[in-house]
Length: 94
Image 1 (cartoon, one colour):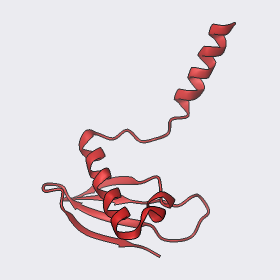
Image 2 (spheres, one colour; image 1 turned 45 degrees about the vertical axis):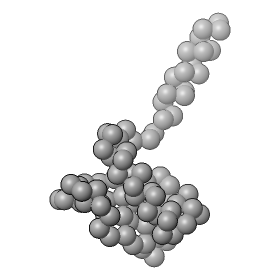
Image 3 (cartoon, helix red, strand yellow; image 1 turned 135 degrees about the horizontal axis):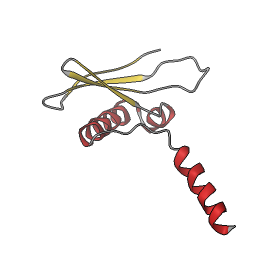
Image 4 (cartoon, helix red, strand yellow; image 1 turned 60 degrees about the vertical axis):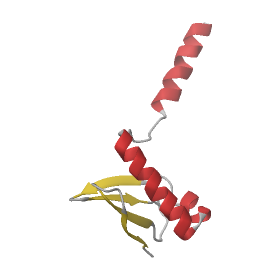
């Protein structure tokens, strides 16, 4: 009985993990983007726009914030060069 309950708990815990799986490079890019957002807009904005997504477009990584379902508003974007990992642009939509 105890093993059945433990098994069910493990299934629930592991099935609830909806976070995307990022490569080491993507994790580094995400960290750079989040640091720039925090430095530019403050920790309140950083935390309120989680989770962040990463897309690769041409020679740029794009780190983008998100809003909860049903919310209206803007999110921060950070553009990072894929070769040098330098921040090329940052802005916040409205």
